[in-house]
Length: 155
Image: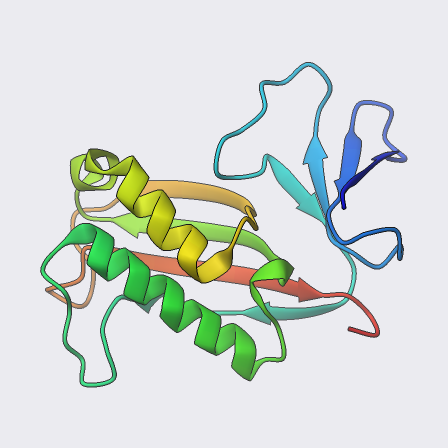
């Protein structure tokens, strides 16, 4: 259950997403700003940091799905595995940067992309940015994502 707490900054309100333990990462939502959909404007947290490199949507054999949503889902699953290896989970995500080769492919199926995201990460929405790039190192990759998680102290 979320709780609203006033932050030390008078211009920010923190929505604590992990209960009232005081250890959770907090979503930062400046007063008067429109509520973001599918991401957070900012996250504050303390604890052990887990960082991924650029993660692409291939399977264990290095094979990519042919569609954007399929690659995105595998990218999310691969990120979840890296987080798990570092003792973190989707609830600890605080930042994601998406690099896509075709912004129109990213925008083409928001419902499918959202469903793929929620199937892997649930309703955990970190601070995010999406950037179109000319190409990625892996020629068949349509999406590459860097992620940062903070595991609260004692968690």
